[in-house]
Image (cartoon, rainbow, N blue to C red; front, side):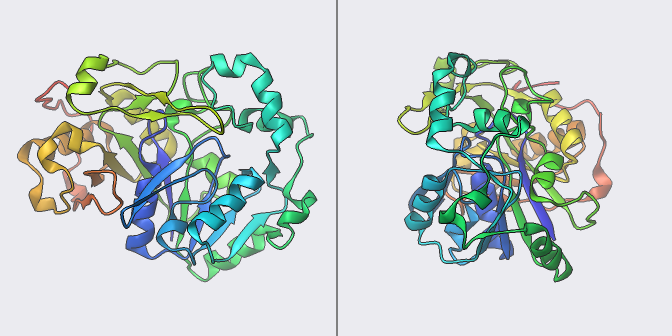
Length: 357
């Protein structure tokens, strides 16, 4: 079984939390992290918060899990080593010998180019390293002695894992709206942040019948920097419902306050289609209804939330399977789904005017 968690908006959708929850619930065997060090993921586990740029959040839930980095991954070695120490990681670590390496010099080169900052880059060297990869000048993992005990040709390992029916969880990066191909260019990531590209980064094809694509989406999407956000919410209104988030920073650079918007169903429809989503994980519903904070039972969900979930399903065509009710990993509600109730494209109720059709 292969499960991949991808972002449906502009990053910050809670992919790290969703991945950690699925890792604990499904007792996965292998956790894979895609992308580069630009996208930090936060997980709160047993009352302790971890913010990771390299290791998948599943490694926090189970420090003995196997972790794979594919050939398309970009690795910042000091960050990887620090995170291994931080969480006490003790599992198998495999890095494809052709994975790219982000060095401190690459980071400095990117930061000297002011164009990256104007576009809202996290300035972690990921964009510059991606460009160097295209120019065939990026250093690879096979060249670094610090990684020698972990580097390999990952393809045979993945082939064995699939043949042995191992449970594989892929923690994606960025969000659909930040895809270099499908997003709000040029205010995007340097990479394509869709499920197909992430599978390709690891060396997995699209033919697996057991593939699940979980599309993470925020009830109120946020964005770290410039670019389209659909219908943006006034800062005062975000304050009133308790949304005050920061993100997008990196080493030595403070996080910026995130802009907040209303749920955009057109964006979500496109994200679901391009990613081939099979399920939606909707985060931030505790901002939509504060009485739902930290609830974990489907029976606790109000009639209004159920109508909202049904409306999203009818408009997007993909069922909402998970509802996040708070930042902690365990604050999650799982919903049953009857596949016969789909009525895609049906006009829906919007009781609080919280999304655009």
